[in-house]
Length: 397
Ligand code: 3PG
Image (cartoon, rainbow, N blue to C red; front, top):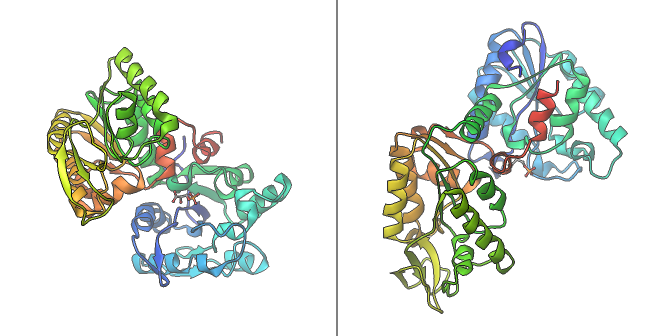
């Protein structure tokens, strides 16, 4: 498993895949976390005498050159964050780009346009040969290849998983290495007790995570809308709360498996309920039975206390998914209390998934967590125990 430090980048052109799929509004990057997260690798190459050709996607332009998805805002933001000159190429491949690549001096950065401007990137609507040709042309832009795009590692796309066929030396950047180290260690050899907090609206998106964690965790704390599918499996009244009827049986099986494996699977013992899905709704705290006309939108105070106590005694905590509708103030206490408890705990704390990362950032406690993942779908698939194509392509080399 090579990392960027194993490469000699002096005088070399480094082709680096990053994940600059960042929110953009009016041509300006909003949250630049993913750009700053790639800086250690970028600066390492520049400081060690290399030049950089950066590749990324942004949004889903579906193989069309739609400038709504240009990487210009990301390149502009990058230029503010590094001392090197940053140029945005007018395209991804082609003679003009090739000329820019060949003229790139050491210590400078060339950002290619959005790789998803070509259908060959995702490999949809083209032949395998066409995708190979695209990847080969990208590969010709670098002497060595570095992937630092953990956020995209679950996609078997040309710039992640095919390009590696055509370039001899491939390695993981600092960000990708750090993500694999934290997530991998937590799942393979966690310091115990290992507590997972799993929330979010739908059980269907998290089933495989829960199932995988049943073999690794001492306790799993369930919150968010998915809790009520478990309630239904237990025969509890859920009123108008979220439920996935086709997953009730599965939820019942998970509860049985948890018991058989001796894993403490905890569900809310009380709930903050509302009479409408609105920040101005009437609210009250009820136990674990929800009457008609009310829906649960957050875990209740007793559950908060129980979950926070569980977190306080943990040595490893993995959190994915909010405990309630934290975007609305009356239903934010569960998510933010758990967030603070994780930050305060003396554990290795790993946060994955867009919503829980957003909550951590809003709480201002991101720097108190051991690791806040830059992956949404990627960290979810990692937690499901799946092999990520973007990582497999590197380790296969
Ligand atoms: C993400 O934001 O999860 C990654 O950048 C991947 O984007 P995608 O879901 O459009 O493939």
